[in-house]
Amino acid sequence: MAGSYPKIETKLTSLLHIDYPMIMAPMFLVTNDKMMIEALNSGIAAAVPALNYRTIAELKNAINNIRTYAKGPIGINLIVNKSNISYPEQLNCCIEMKVDFIITSLGSPEEVIQKCKPVGIKVFCDVVDEVYAKKVADLGADAVIAVNNEAGGHCGNLDAVTLIKKIKSVCSIPVISAGGVGNGAQMFTRIDVDGACGVSVGSPFIATTESRVSEDYKNACVSYGAKDIVMTTKISGTPCTVINTPYVQKIGTQQNWLEALLSKNKTLKKYIKMFTFLKGMKAVEKAAMSATYKTVWVAGKTIEYVNAIRPTKEIVESFIEGYYEELGRHFNSRRT
Image (cartoon, rainbow, N blue to C red):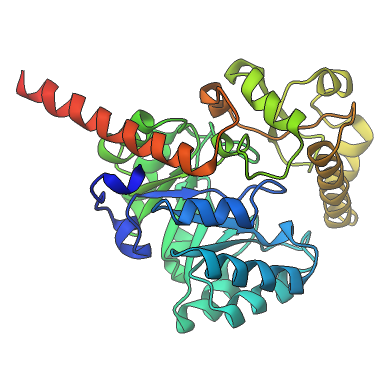
């Protein structure tokens, strides 16, 4: 059991008062109340996208439900650009419900930081380079989530080691690494070797018994591997990693000439991007929740380490066990 291992002391565990420096990443359509509860009760942090709930009432009920059955910091992921028309209400809800932390994505976190910091809500910001990391640090972010080029969904351009080093060279706030961590040994490397204070892990949790996505989606994460992950701009207009199913092969991974042209038009640009994002997310939702030949399943290369559909708690335990096994190997190698 994860709780049988000693607490791992890092800036992240101190910041969120958790036992182990891991955040179960917020995954669109995938993360739900049950997964959150199991993750929090296993000694890690967890976040859920606000967009996974259709109404503010559903979001409030979810937060209350998680608080009833779990102990640990509740995180909410907010899309803070104009594609998310519910953002203002979602932010107000998070403040009213006094969630523990917010992860901002795809936009400026300035308003979130200004409103949340005074009431004690921590703000972590997704970043893909050191320039943006410096900006959010100057705005008062509590930590950055360094999204590298191995992350599932919308990923960055830099490898994990380079990105962590670049960010730490320009700002002093904690750096949480996102992408490319599929087991405990890799978690150890990212923290104890590469210098992150924790990891954000998503794709290994898709194929969980608590996840409400379709069995086909879960089984795809078991059956496919790292070599089957491709980048596409067809979903949201922004590069996104998906499993290379026959349907994805059929439709291609690049926007057609008209989509690309409209996306560059100065007048129509923001509206086209919003329409593309909403249309793409609807397609992803249909594929994730039902049997359909239009299989667009978002995932990262760490599905390479998914060998079965397992409970969330069991996955957390395997990470912590693997972390300590790798720690032991490093300790023994130094002695010899």
